[in-house]
Image (tube, rainbow, N blue to C red; front, side, top):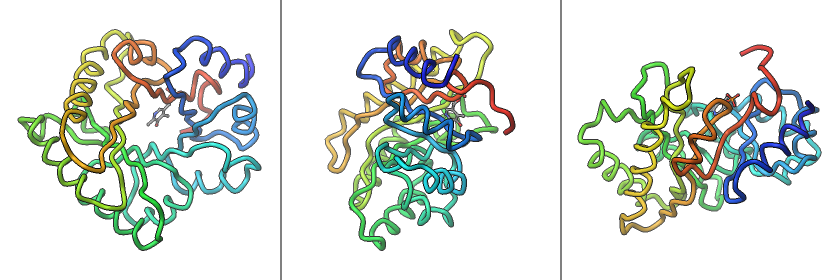
Length: 230
Ligand SMILES: *Cc1c(COP(=O)(O)O)cnc(C)c1O
């Protein structure tokens, strides 16, 4: 099947309120152009360098929203701010502050950020690990409170990868826990927070993720096929 057909099939299958972020790592500008022509509205990139190259190579780059979904090193924040509309991978207060300062210096409007939760507390993955910060509800509330004081970013969601299992059913409890954290943050009476997006679910897990309350899935393989290199 072609890229555009694959995208259209997923779009038809899932509810309208769920945003598809097309995960573009290792893909060519031609492949990405094809998916944008098929109606894709949101593009996800893991690398600032690759994102910049693709952005410049695309005619319609400014028509879509760009999401940073890979780890963002502090020394790449300025460059990232020139490309990305949202940064989904904030994993600490120092990182949030670093982004906030650079947005201020660049005199840009508030930048939407999401906190990345490493819901399986896996050492191989980035994100805030619940197992390292118990009781986690208190830790996350404190983090959110501090982020809400920053004037140049706005917390708009949570992102999680979740452990990878052969059977996507096995990730369900992790998604459920992430959704609970998301709902808890929503109830906090804090300024500069607008919890709109729960970014969870990938090629092998998006159905389960949507059932557990995700409204933003990040899909690469199911649209483009297996990655040729990583
Ligand atoms: C690569 C990647 C995806 C997409 O994964 P697929 O299994 O190819 O759909 C989603 N989110 C992040 C953070 C990724 O790095």
